[in-house]
Image 1 (cartoon, one colour):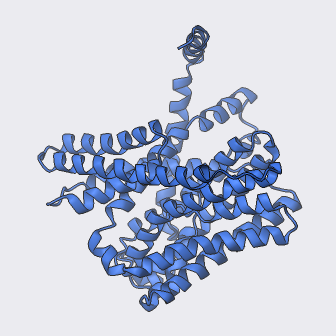
Image 2 (cartoon, helix red, strand yellow):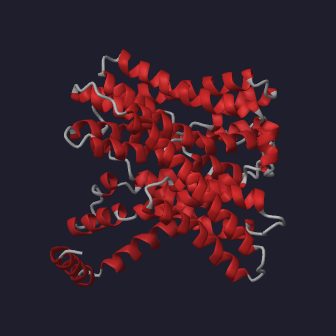
Image 3 (spheres, rainbow, N blue to C red):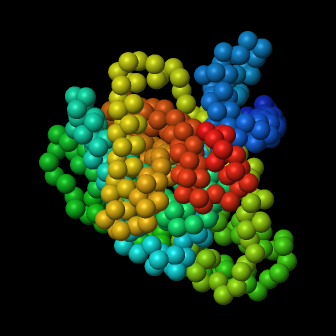
Amino acid sequence: MSTDLIEEINRFQEWFITYQVSNKVIYVVGLLMILALLIVLLAKKIKIPIVVGYVFLGILLSINIVELAPFMTPEQKKWYAFTVDSFDYIAHIALAFIAFTIGSELSVRVLKRLGKTIVYVVILEATGAFLLVTLAVLALGKPMYLALLLGAIASATAPAATVMVLREYKAEGILTSMILAVVGIDDAIALIIFSLVEPVALLQFSGESNIAFAHILFEPLTEIIGSLVIGLLIGFLSQKFMATIDDKTKKILTLVSTVVGGSALSILFNLSPLITNMAVGFAYRNFARKNLGIGEYMDTLTTPLYAMFFILAGTEIRFNSVFSFTFLTLAFAYLFARMAGKISGASLGAYLGKAPEKIKKYIGLGLLPQSGVAIALAYTVQKDFATAPEVGVLVFNILLFTATLTEVFGPFATRYAIFKAGEAREVESEAYEAGVGL
């Protein structure tokens, strides 16, 4: 570590203590937790998915909205913006537990039962979104590199909101299993598509013609295979250890250290934390010889974590950059083309795979939310297009704007699908059948 870096860290520590930054973080966390409780009470009362309430709360607490508050000083507004922007690690940890949850639902028995159907669905829903978004952006007269970038990112599906809705309504059945399997595998497919397309877009933007095969194919495959291997190994060893203990404290610490530790190792070796933890959850589900009894612990651990995650996702929106006609035209073209690609591609895959009728009709409705992975890919575009920051900023703002919208109406679509398919186990199903709620 260089002397300059050590001095910089010392100055940062002094600044951190002088301005009592930790206290300001506690103020914001305390506010978000209190408001999250109020949102849960309100959501249950008016019968909307809790995750929608969280995202709406986040939008109301976005930096652009808070800056309009007349009762706050400029200094308080600045501290609020700094604190909210410093919560990135919460998103990483929340996504790690979400990936673990998805993996833990993917039993070999269920995958065998789904058979070739899941292969058709996951490939066609991802490529359908990619193709339709690419064509829609080109139809608006935008350059090829921008169309390719947005098309590749459109293939990703965010599992978080979908998993939250399925858990909230205790969904169980063939459609639920298919949705969980698709959103789990989708990240790997999206990563492959993006890794193949982004170098082509970069070269097309720069005017170069040489494409390195290793960079396009070898690197993403290495990342995916490496993530799966390390995740399966960690999961196997962890569940073996957990099977030998009965103490609640030890089980909780084992679970947390496994998920967070798996993420840390993935980041250290430039692998995918999402795919790694999905593999960890898969190992827990399929290698364990007895019920490890961690379901209750997961619910307790993740409830406040998920609340923070979705609220902070809502705060990401920046209203000062989304009000131009050109931007809104491009953003809504992206949004509707992606929805059409996901729904039609998934339904076509279910048809080709001879899936049950309710999967053909409703599978696409569980694949609409987009945040996490897509935003991470948008970050990658910002980094790789550093010489043209306007490209990265445009892509990132489109993703933030459309992701916020899908995090709101996506859960409603998932909820509609599981109730119509008869797989919701919540007592609200009676009210739903009577026409209450939606």
